[in-house]
Length: 228
Image (tube, rainbow, N blue to C red; front, side, top):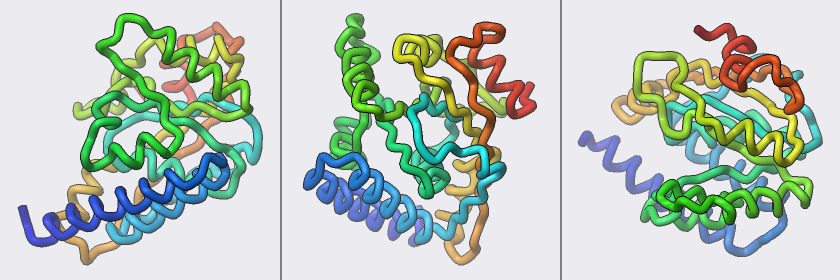
């Protein structure tokens, strides 16, 4: 590892746990949103990663949605938090068990408003129950339909079936967002050379109605962003 990579790893660990501790002090969704946003701004600024939002006018100011996004990097949630900063939307991230138990992310994830997805548990009733509990309060759900980070050369990995089920069961229209830049490559470049500012582009799509069954979610998402 380079000196810059070591320095950033130490700083990011401190910052994540610092904000994770702050999150333990509140249960208010908008306060959690503010803390998550402050964390995203602070870390991305340190990495000199700027966020450019394409079609920002398509972001609803209020409401309740299933936000669906592609997934290439560990900083994707931070990019999305930046994109939503001028709205009242508060969403619970669907997070895998590994993040809950992570030394690096655990304290933050457990207290940021995440919903645990345990893929090893054959009984998913508690998972769907948690989602129902939060949507009844008027909160949104944020999910990566690919299920894991896309490390291939393809623009998009295959979508899992669960996202559409969540939308239909909870009557959530879907807000598609697409991180056009390869955020992981940008992150790696920043860790290699922290002197240069870089820009990551995120595009906002049109709302996809949960009642619309003319296309699968993956087909509708690809059509929205002209992906193959």
